[in-house]
Length: 459
Ligand SMILES: Cc1ncc(COP(=O)(O)O)c(C=O)c1O
Image 1: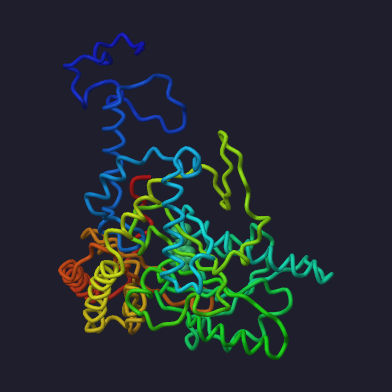
Image 2 (image 1 turned 60 degrees about the vertical axis):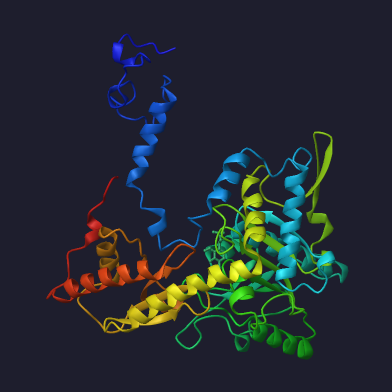
């Protein structure tokens, strides 16, 4: 019941949208609201507030899918109420989840697809955590069996890893051994490993598609270096491939790059279904080359409403619809369709990279030939900065981030465009035209602009 006596608060048919209860007051932000409001009013208020968000299709910072087929949208609307954990109640959704990770095992060249094991997750972060946990547990078990100390596990990776690996090492007490990136080695290389690994190394992470620049780490070379280390020291160190983006690109666009289960040392691979898997946010995948690499004691058999569910996940409840959307894409596109879609993105990325390379201001550092990501830096010192260019582009509608590279290269700022499904060559031409106009304007400056970050919009 609405308790106000104000006639405008009554849910009458004549109650005009922008003058009814709720619309005429300030929205509660710190105090839990006392009174209800009509659903249409609540809808309109939130709908209007998020108008100030950027346009997702023009968000070139994100790797995450912002467009799906209409049929996928229909399937989504029909299945948003399914909870992935209710495997007993939604056995078909559970079966489809299993089909998806088995298909991924095949796509990633597992030696025996009947023997792979995997799971869907909320994204690559959860998938990486599970991959890391399996490595840690296997290492602990082997050490315990040999009567050795298990108190100092470490993991080796490049300093350009995504933040999830920092979280993994922090949350699960694993020493994070970072191989610094540099101009010479902008990502992890096999030659850097000998001094980094020891008997406490639970595994090495190799990234297929470094977040900052999109470049692939040479997984085969990393595995060969570890083979060499095993030959001389006896240490048998596994590799987890963080294929957040590249695990859905390389199989289609660079099938000759050997990075996956063709390499025996690769025990597990994680990927984001919601990036180049082409599904809306939140779905990820992790697959182990065979059941022996996922320790049994990490799997919980949860008894729930009469069923017994094997699960290995950090979350309990999570949406099932995204898993169905992943299967939709596998059926809808197949290898041929994925190849077409990813190739279109790569073509648009290379077109953008060529346009940027033709501008005096920039040096392209990733031209979209690994994953369709283009990154560039200033070719020479100028009076303006990349964050200022980013601000100007935002005013024209383009969301293009500017940020410093990690670690030793932190002095170096770059801009990055992630080209995803739905980004066309025409859009890239429009962006280049606005880029040219913005750079021409900036080049006329004779002294630095005042700090634009002093303006805080909205909040
Ligand atoms: C290499 C890499 N690993 C992990 C992640 C985390 O993925 P998610 O956002 O799906 O949790 C990302 C995200 O950008 C990434 O690029």
